[in-house]
Length: 385
Image: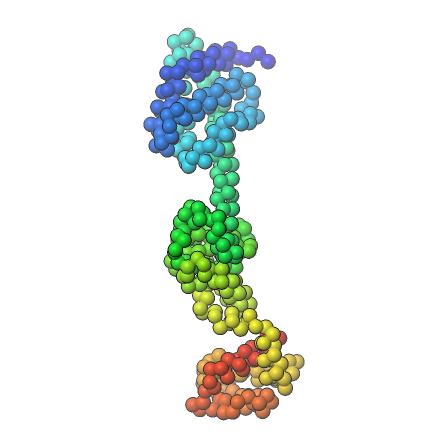
């Protein structure tokens, strides 16, 4: 295919511009003046980038190929390099577009000086604009691809460090990571464990939590992390179950993480949502760790009850409610929507069946703490089965 005369003329102009070191220097100056982030890089590096972009754009233009079919591999690498240097994509494009304006102005001036008609010059510059736009898109694509890869690398390092601190109990090899992610070897941190396991929800929650301070990632397939201060009440939505341990040194965190995970399972089994402290869930968590003992209590203390008998289950649930309400007859009756005498009757009937301690549900009588714990645990276990 014979190229249009305007493209031949403009191609020659662009070759002259690319070879003109003064024009290249003007492009560098314009890019640095338009973007403070570009200006922070060394002049020589800016010049190398400008020369590479000019060469890539000129090569594509001279091939007369559809710009959307060009891969601009070198341009993509330049975009990736800027992402690695921490230059924002906005700052990058400001610099590129400032240099692009220098090229267009030079092409106009030289084109008119060489006698190219304005109409042909304008049409040629419109063609050039298509190639420049494709080049910028390739630059941004390379930037974002590197940004995603850097984010994955950063996230991998964060997850690896958190697994070492929370699951493995080791800080070996992660001293640099502690500093990198803003943790101190002598600091005290809250261990935070959530029930989030969906990767998309984890990423969204990480972004919210990162604004609250601390370090968060995936440990044992769920979102967990460390925070130097208490999380704000609105750090996560109310549907997310969160368990937070008291702040402790790094060497105490593996044990606290294991307890938080255990407490999370207990809280989930109870249908809880929202944020709960490990201290709040301490009793249920401790008891859940002894399933064999729980079974022994239920099958021994309540051996006379038949799990298939609805009346027996009614008696047991009434007794459990009584213990849950501080052994207060009036509060238990109100909670169950019963007359106090009905509660008293059921408690006495249960005592006759299983031999509970005397005087339960009588005025001014309370069981000792350990007796209460024993029967509460037995009733709860038996009803759960």
